Image (cartoon, rainbow, N blue to C red; front, side, top):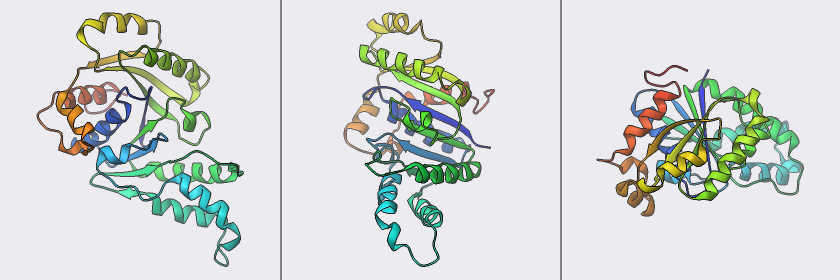
Amino acid sequence: MAKSIAVAGKGGTGKSTIAALLVLHLCEKGMGPVLAVDADPDSNLGTLLGVETAKSIGDLREEVLKEMKNFPAGMSKASYVEAGLHQIIEEASGFDLITMGRGEGSGCYCSLNNMIRKFSQDLYPSYSWVVIDNEAGLEHISRRTTQYIDSLIVVVNDNPLSFDCAERIENLTEDLKSRIKKKFLVTNMVRDGRKDEVHRRLSGLKSEHICDIPYDAKLEEIVYEDKPLTSLSDSPTPGYIDLIIEKIGGINGNS
């Protein structure tokens, strides 16, 4: 059964970048295949991974509601959804990518979400790891459209709003204890003069702090130039990603 990592945090903390680096490094270490799930409405994970996404699950949901009366003869809604979901999976070197896309519109999505959940449950065992880039509200976890989570990683920077977001996520996950096995914090790009204060502000949270990822000019330049992270070289950041993977049970770590 695949081990699952969910990455969450306020926008601007580097959450999606860390999720993408986790995918790439799991593959680089021969720990694949990996399923990357972009569950953030901003849908940046594909760009960071160098994968172009043509269609999302959100697009498919709307298409199914629109085309239900025009399904081919003998094709059920479940069969149509499953066929569409297989087409949505973008294949890359060592990993596949699924993009959740936009939120739900005004139609009834209950049965569709049940089909998507079943498809996901059937799909995940084909992978060694699943890495999910979440929105701060953890909608896909709390609404049970995403599987159980082995490790939740909340990314925080020195923006006080990211502390508030981390606290809200912790409060939310208190109601999801049975769905999340372990919770961790990663501080990212915190300036040296603010580290002690950031650590103090986060000390009241129950999640375990893994590491401080320092500012990385090369990484920032690649993200700014909209280049895939596969082009990152001569950077200290991958060492911290390896540390995270080890801590949550990969490489030589214990789950």
